[in-house]
Length: 417
Image (cartoon, rainbow, N blue to C red; front, top):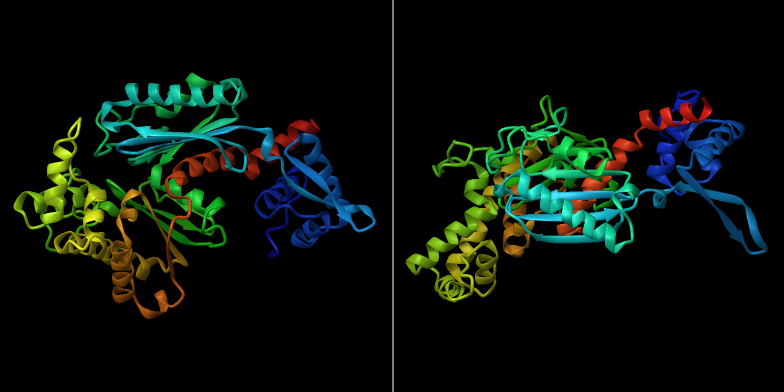
């Protein structure tokens, strides 16, 4: 552990102590004193109040001769229930979690965001209620709800603004609708920011102060973490790397520009190019796959998944497509590495699973096109949480908001008053 911030007094000192217990716990009173340069009596004073407020708990340590006098303090994570919702372009993932964002129950299913907010949110409500019922809980047991949306989010409004792939969602009051339906606080953010937060709090980047989380799915976006916190930019659109232009590419993007990264190398682009390879016969494996999918009920089209399978089988054209797409992503990430110099890049989203050649091509371009100093200790890895990271991140967002230093300080003042 490292010595953390100090200089707080009164209820704010209690809030700061809680913050350390939540982030670093379980910890002892003696460790808290060293971390915050506080006396034993001062630490005990604030810890006793946090115990009475009910947001931390303690566990006695056992010694060889029986119960010891020392105890460890931890966040009372099971005294609240939060819901994390990850809405993607073509799916919805919902999880009921405790206050440490540990998934207790979850459900995922296909759901087209283009069906509009009324249909999509109604189905999402049904899923939440089904999960709660399975746990013998009701909406009255909820502490809060977090949701990630696949578009630019104005957190002040609690809605998306001019989203390219979300017809009918522009400035729709998502936060207020969900809050009204369930009667609990609701927090909204861009889906990639939410995923990045999940990696920062409980994922593979938990010990990294500054890193990039890059989602590669139907679209491509990045969540920027600086000193453990999400960096959203002046208006909340930081990390929208899917609309960085690729030199020489002219395909028109949904945003109206041409040659954007996601229209060139996203999951949708890989699927589209795979269908072209099948139609022209350039890829025998994909041509055979296209015929098979056309006979299914209902018929399906080639996606990035099928392209990845064909590449794994040794189909030359499919493999070249996968590598080319990875290099496009890597060329953009190299520019970000030179500018931002992160400790780590975590790759998530469904398209990262199309095969090792895709990831290898990304790494190759990052190393080739970035400065040596920026990459000498740079770690590039796949998300360990896979498809769960959006739900976990949305739940983490709720806990961060409800148990922020300011809110906990207010809880303590209310208790003392």
